[in-house]
Amino acid sequence: MAKLGSTLQPLQASWNWKQHGTSIVGKRADWWFVIGQSGALQPIVVSAALANLQPTSLEQLKAAILAKRKLYKLSQFDNKNHVLTFSLKADFSSAKNAERVELLVEDLIVSFRQLGLVSGCQLCAGEQALHAVRIGENTAAVCDACHAHLEEQFSGIVEKNEVQGNYLTGLIGALLGALAGSALWLLVSYLGFYASIVGFVIAFLAQYGYRLFKGRVSRAMPLIVAVSVVLGVLAANVAEVAISLVQDPEIGMSWADAIHYAPMALYDTELFYVGQVWGGIAIGMLFAFLGGWRTIRGLIAETRGVTYQIETL
Ligand SMILES: [Zn+2]
Image (cartoon, rainbow, N blue to C red; front, side):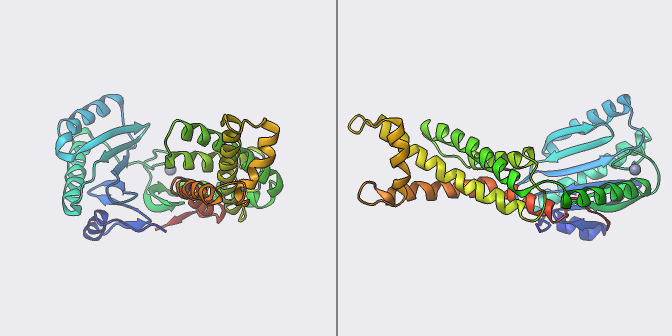
């Protein structure tokens, strides 16, 4: 599991907040906050849920915070219904990052107090007593009723996942998704560049295909998706060889022959520069790994049931 970053560690210690993964949750004065940072130099995200946020108080709050946006290094301010989210740019100094977070939190408290705003449950906005929980990998402050409700929903999902779906149809879907991603990969490499974002797209489409074809969301899923990504990268490289066999004016093969001969590029050293082909595959695998590992890690968490857990911190 990801560790808490050095910006949030001192805040958690001095405020005596709860922590899970890369985020912390707790109360300052009368208000609950959640603060997270997914990695060093990633934005620091401060959020607060309010029970009685009206459009007019939101406007006033916004004006007060935006007036000092440079001081906080605020890059984004968002509100989804009753949940406010502030993203601060992180720089190299953890101490300065923590100082800016603290300043924002203290200013928010002043504004909340002035505007008569009250903390609310992150899920239902209710004003009932709240407590700190982790929901999957995230932290939150929720009410007892939402906690109980979510727990029930999650146990239903985990039970269902264990019996529903089929690994074989999932594999077919994942392969089709990975092939679609690989076709995109070929297109991009023809435009002359490799990018790890394409690795992400292949992994994303593989898991999307898996779900679309009703694959079982259980233990073997991450492995099936990962294998599909690897096969997708191989297919893209073989297809690249086939295309070059057709397009090379000195070879000028028909498509049928090219598709027949291209897979030999993986092993036939007399006909092909096999080392060069595997070099291309290695680069492809590297980018697929860089772009896809987060997706696979998310699937591992999901299929172990970690995503569908709520627990008091
Ligand atoms: Zn609630």
